[in-house]
Length: 297
Length: 113
Image 1 (cartoon, rainbow over the protein chains, first blue to last red):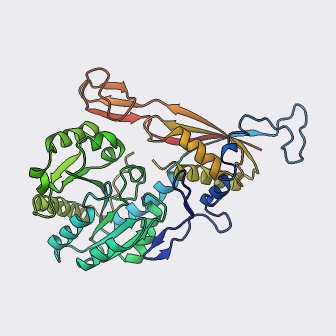
Image 2 (cartoon, each protein chain N blue to C red):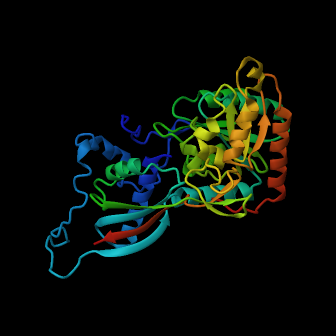
Image 3 (cartoon, each protein chain N blue to C red):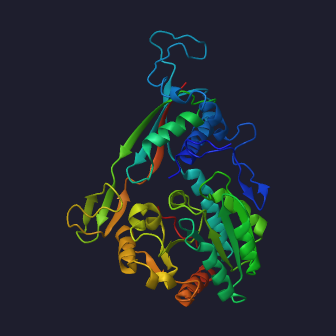
């Protein structure tokens, strides 16, 4: 059941068709479930705010002049748990010479087609594996396997992004080779995946020329988080009223350091440059094996 | 950003702390959310109420302290205020601004019993 208010639902994450081992201890449950009950009295949640209940102590009483509550300082980063898992993944990648890329974009930008083309072009020269993230179906993993690379599908159910814990599980099931390339195709979504580090070396944002030039301005967090932008479907430029230079300028307004490669999976334009970028990354990772890049955020 | 996941993470931090410190009820939670963290505060309040039902933090008051965005303008070579990531430098109008603060999210403090 999906909540129509915010899209949350029961944990439905599947990795290669199997349920994800939960991060929470048994019995504590995934809290999403409780949301169902929230619908029955949707407008009541604010009603208890601001109440001072003096009878709510352990004994159901309040001793005058004696406060039962105390303050606890915790100072914990909210995304720390995900970042811990991401750190673990990053150490694993580094220790095994694995160059991991997190590919992000809106749905329909041509991520999978570009991956298929990339796999075909790299064939044999570079050991690689692919993790595919989608809400439903294993269509994409099937396409990657048909292209000749090992692939594992993560279905996030109602979830809108991959997180580091899912990647950790998927890595174990895939059995990654040393000194290999790992391509993670995130769920098509330009919002949520920006905030969830997976332990990758780089986020690569794919931005197709059939979208608007102002996409980087509308979704700045993602373009900010990415180190490389692939401007895809460039073979269509002659037929479109799309200003590629403006699109690149908009991306650089958000992220002055972002690298840009103009590509087309159909014509093959820019693919050589993209492969060179990947190969250089793989080489660096193998050379610097065991040296974990400081997490920057 | 995904406010439901963030509310889940906040609850997990609270529950972990409740287990180690042995308290049974959380009455108030103070969060520090950066202006540039990509979080919709109202959405987060809604999600927090939902995920904390049946937990130690049920009916807890949520206090959110927003921290201002800060950046370093490479052209001016100085620290500037940043209200949104894609905004130009308020000083020179350029876009070479690196965010240096106000992009974090933390659980600061709890009132417990």
